[in-house]
Amino acid sequence: MTDERPSTWRPGRMESDPARLVALDVLEQVRDGAFANIALPATLKRANLSGKGRGFATNLTYGTLRMQGRWDAIIRMCVQGRPFEEIDPLVIDILRLGAHQIQGLDVAIHAAMNETVNLARNEVGSGASGFVNAVMHRISERTAAEWDEVLAAELADQGPKAVLAAQTSHPEWILDVYEKSLVASGRTVADLGDVLAANNGPARVAIAPRAVSRETVMNDAREARATPLDGVLMPDAIVLERGNPGRMQSIRDQSAGVQDEGSQLVAHLLAGAPLEGRDEEWLDMCAGPGGKTATIAGLVQGRNVRVFANELHDHRLDLVANAVAPFGDAVALREGDGRTLAREEPNRFDRVLVDAPCSGIGSLRRRPEARWRKTPGDAEGMMELQAGLLAAAIDAARPGGLICYSTCSPDVRETLDIVNQFTDRVDVLDTVDVARTMVIPGSLDTISGPYLQLWPDEHDTDAMFAALLIKK
Image 1 (cartoon, rainbow, N blue to C red):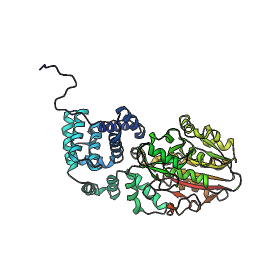
Image 2 (cartoon, rainbow, N blue to C red):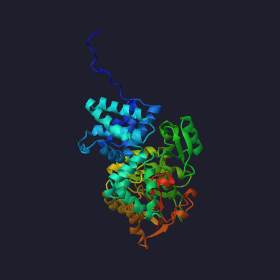
Image 3 (cartoon, rainbow, N blue to C red):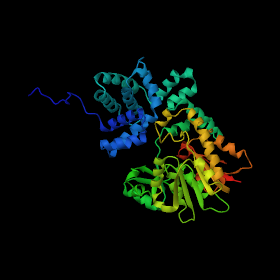
Image 4 (cartoon, one colour):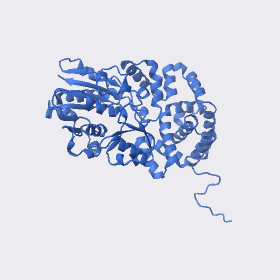
């Protein structure tokens, strides 16, 4: 036997599991500023993962990012006095993945331990693997309920909100915002735990049929080996219990689109709310990336309506153009600041949608890393822009025209505070009671009006807000 060995040969060393390698790769990319929903598909493609491996990598990646705050709090108590901030960030990522497998997924403890230690040995080194092995053993010694008790005792001096923030893996400031928003929408602070738990579950894929029938999309999903089910809110919506929507022909040719049911409902509110007089020119003031615009275009097929889609950024306008491609000349595109439209074309449009840029804290299920990147000041930084866009929408609407203001945030600073700036001026606007419109599904009997506020726990949607206003 020769003493020569291949340079990559390592005695007793197992290769890392490809799905776990994908998850670790994406966590590193997110740490460097990437978005998980963009980084993960590309990384899965490079790794050529499919089937169960693809599903496991997806659940592990998104789940670890969502629950990062909880895992970090637990890891801090398991490193036995070693400063958390001094630990190699790659090792922290590996420990987060390991903690999620033991505490957050149905993975056998011995498998989670072995794979996590092996990942540390292969990606960092033998020294790191010993440290990871010790920490993983401590994490595995308690159940999730027992760790809740430990976190409560450890953080008791910081108050109950700090305990809940760590247990549910949310920044404490988001809890404050949600509490105010729940009360403002007619719920109670006692509902906070349900909302936080819903945020920590994966959002199901919802599909909006646009240029084809619902039945066509259902059949298309089955042909793509997906499992389509009825939507929760919208009669035409479809949700996928399992399956990859990217394999569906109707998704690839834009005749249907992946769109949260709350977002679909906002498009239906704009299109279906009662309006007196002319109803031919509609404006989507902040159209990118085009989901609501395309759904609106599908709803007005056969009606004498033209949709004008405005978007500030050219790359997002390209996304709008792609989304509305099946509708040809029914949609006109414009690149520019929506706030200038009122000066260029005042008192013109019959219906105006302002889907305003916002902090986005209503879509935390869908964007797992967002809760760690947002700050309390994000909403305040948006308020001037939001108010400016709504003012411009009012000016651009004809007298008697309809304005729909929506956000993917329940923060009252971005919702009620903005709308109230204008509804307090009774000479300018009338408020349409959303709960009294025929557009609201029967499943929304909890909506008391006059505005729409959805919640992930009650409605299985993003926490969308919408207000309907009539220009006097």
